[in-house]
Amino acid sequence: MLCDKDQYVEELLILKTIAENLNQSNDMKQMLQTTLEKLLDLTHLETGWLFLVEDKPDYTKMADFNLPPALSWDNQKPMRCGDCLCLRMYWEGTLNEPVTIIECERLHNAKEQSWGETRNLTHHATIPLTVQGKRLGLLNVGSPGKAHFSEGELALLQSVAYQIGTAVERTKLSEQKEKQAVDSIARFIVDYYAKASKVTRYLWKINDMKRMLVAIVEQLAYSFDWPCVAMITSDDDNLYLRTVHQNGQTQSGKELVRKDAKKSTRKSGIVQRAYEEQSVVVQEGLLRVLPGIQPHSYTAAIPLKHLERIFQTYETMGVLLIGRESGPFSELEVEILEVLAEHISLAVEKICLYYEWQDLLLVEERNRLARDLHDSVNQKLFSLSLLAQGVRETTLHENTHTAEAIHDIGQLAQETLTEMRTLIWQLRPSGEAKGILASLKDYAEKLGIQLTFLMKEIPVLTNRVEETLYRIGQEALNNISKHAGTNRAWIRMEQDGSYLYMKISDQGRGFNPGSPELCPRSFGLTSMKERASELQGTLSISSEEGTGTMLTIMIPLWTKEEVIDQ
Image (tube, rainbow, N blue to C red; front, side):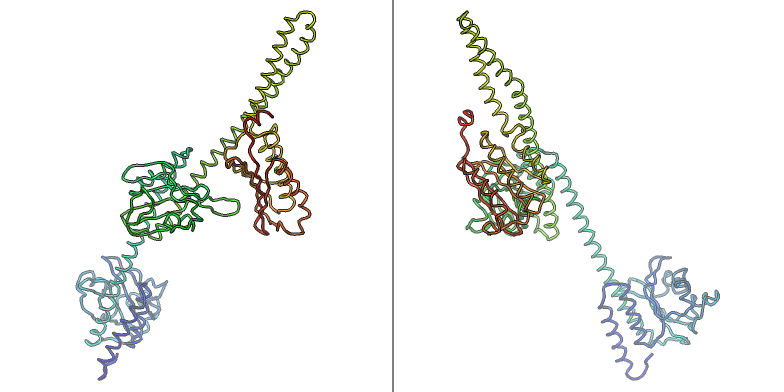
């Protein structure tokens, strides 16, 4: 080691370099390894090792450099197993200052067991690692043939050991804090998901929309201890406040809070922004969000989205609003809220599908009853009417009173037959023997097209209207099969005022409706437009190349009297 007149400066340089090295890493093992190597290089020593020591008999070798073969034998087994004089003194509390260990016990044992060369390494300096009286481990350094360490050398090594001890303690505290933070986050995530799972399991048992809207706000408020939870739903881009739970009470209704939200020129609030941007929006401060909802220090608006739409991957169907005082919404919490919103959206979507399934069952049952009435009672009434007419003709000249009675029977049968036909029309809102929807479904299957119906309740239609819609649907499915390059299609039917709309769409290759290359389809499109025009209706085409095609058929509704007349 250095001992000339510049020794003091050199020692300060060593301490400075070691301190800089200790601050370069927060990884304990890497930090100690590089520090040991740097120390040996600066002090011109050749070998060393470092232990972090726990209560007897536990210790861990954290770093080593240039160990002789005798100590490196069998994956450094002599350094990992058993104890030595250094450790025993440490555990007994007698090793409090740097000392020179004469004839190291580990080297002696290795020599006795013939584990390899010691390279003439016999002595080493042992320096306890401490910080503020707390003992952490041992630093051992030496060189072949070096049998003595001066007081100056030991003092320098002790100063280095203080630095190492401080760095070890700092790193342990940092690791402990990181572990506590990770554990805290893990507990937070597990707790959050457990509550969310409990809510979604409850919601999935509900098959009524009104009950669902109430359950969402109540379950979230109770499970997460949120003072305010509200459900805002959209209907044709109008936003309605449906349910809100605040101050321990739940209110339901359908209050318009924003008309045509996507086109509104009014200043966008947190709810409208979440609806328009289809992303979570959070804000801080006591700002008024919606009429009737108290302001809170922290507010979040989470969009609820349909997972499958015709032309968009997602379409916002509502917004979940949360207000609280407990603290801001972190990025992690926002991510979890997005997952929770997906579960709520699926639960709502499930109810919509349940309603559609019930409607289809109702249509099937009504069609079955209509077929049974048509095939049995209707035919028998018709036969009775013909029979009465024949008997009346036979008895007309023989007994006028009998003929009149039989005539009355025939008239009664004819009137009953008319009423029966009206009843059949009321039972069969779906035209043909199998109904327009079932017929189009069968036709699509024959073409290899998977057809999905998106419909609300529609009024009773006349034979003529159903026949027209069926023929237009047939032609549209033909075009999809031949030209669209897809095997999926959607049909939406709904009433809007005094008009019935049928929209037929696909996500195929699309086309330019004004293109001169439209000839293969032009006859079919012309035919469909003519059919709609015959009922004072219209047919419009919306399509672009690569975006699919939508046909919209608008037909005026017939009155109830016109239906009965037909």
